Every structure is written in C-alpha cells, then in structure tokens.
Image (cartoon, rainbow, N blue to C red):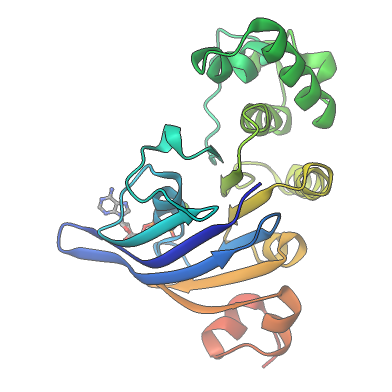
Amino acid sequence: MADLKIKGATKAFGAVKVLHGIDLEVKNGEFIVFVGPSGCGKSTLLRVIAGLETVTDGEIEIDGVRVTHLPASDRGLAMVFQSYALYPHMSVAENMGFALQNMGLKKPDIEARVKRAAEMLRLTEYLHRKPKALSGGQRQRVAIGRAIVRDPKIFLFDEPLSNLDAELRVATRKELAALHTEIGGTMIYVTHDQVEAMTLAHRIVVLRAGRIEQVGSPLELYNHPANLFVAGFIGSPR
Ligand code: ADP
Ligand code: MG
C-alpha cells in the first residue's frame, strides 16, 4: 500500500500533447477511478504512473520517493489490462506464479501466494485448468490474481471489465469491491462506465482532453458537478 503523488505530469507523443500538467494526490488505501471520454488520456495517465511511458515533464512520487525515471519493474506496481492475455499453454496456477518465478521467489513462497490469491478470487478449484477451459469472468479473475500475488504497493486497472458481458461485469465489479475491502490496497481504476465509477470509487477523477475537470467523491460530483461536462458524464440532473 502506498501514497502516490503526481506533479505537473505532461505527456506528448511527438507534437501531440496528451496530458497537460496533471496534479493529483492519492492516499494509501484509496480507491481512485479515472473517467472521461475515449481518447482523453486515461490510459496514458495510468501508463505514466506504471512506468510504461515516461512523462515529458513533471514528477511521480510513490511514498515520497521520486520514481519518475524508474522502469516499470522497479516501481512496485501491478497493472491489470482489458485484454488479459493469459499464457494458453500454462495452467491457472502457472499463469499466476510466472512473474514471481522471474522475480526470483522460491517455489514454496510462490505456491503460498498463488493459493491465497486463488482463495480470494474463488479460483482454487480451477488452479490446474488451462485458460481455454475457463469462462471470460474466470479468466479476468486469473489476470487480477496475477496482480495480487505480486503484492504490489498500488494496483492499476485499465478497463478490466469492459470485455465481459453485462451480467459478469456486475458480478466481477462486486468481487473487486470485496477484494479492496479485504486487501485494502491503493487502487487506481480506469473506466468509461459511470456505474462502475460511482459504485467503486472513494474519489472520481474526471478527465477531459488531458486535463482534470474535477476530483471528488461520487456524491460530491453528483450533487455539485463543477460544470455541464462533469454533470453529463456523471449523470447528475443539473
Ligand atoms: P483513453 O484511455 O482515455 O481512451 P489514451 O490515453 O489511450 O485515451 O489516448 C489519449 C490520446 O493519446 C489519444 O488521442 C491517443 O490517440 C493518443 N496516444 C496514446 N498513445 C499513443 C502513442 N503511443 N503514440 C501516439 N499517440 C498516442
Ligand atoms: Mg484507454
């Protein structure tokens, strides 16, 4: 678990500016949701935090330590993507333990971490199956399990449920909420789904064209949207 500080984060791809000086502080244990229309920079902001992209300008701090120029593998974060790309030839247990093997952990430690994550995600009875013998929701839970076993300081989720059908999306969203209650990690979650944002977030960050329009609790944004854009996005009646 960790605090995260983003100071004046700017990102340009060539001449195209995608993030325009983002300032944001996330507290240890907080569940933060980034929302905004397609192309507004949600994924880029997440990737900049993760270290998968470097900022053009600005700083990123985790627990007071500047990580702006550290590679992704040294930031202690774990990211779950929309396309969960499991290794088809590996079992669920192997998929979940693979990164730990590369990190140099010993077999008993890997097995204990995989077992614990599988219990949390109700995957224990599927540990020996191959991904193709799982449902879409189970596969996405394996992808979440791969993040949990790494015991990251911060979890980053990029639209993790958007490939699931409506019913599974609701079920998996509830599991994610329960998971956060159970492990209490700092979570940063990107979605374009208002219901996900309103139900999961402690605070919602509304992005528009690479800038923050408003930050607040779901209730604050709903009752006091800063402008019509936020009101429209959150679905409040103003
Ligand atoms: P969102 O996740 O909110 O849909 P993105 O962060 O993916 O938005 O993209 C924001 C903008 O940055 C888009 O206009 C996109 O085309 C552009 N972009 C993202 N990644 C790259 C890249 N690697 N090279 C050039 N442009 C990019
Ligand atoms: Mg995106």
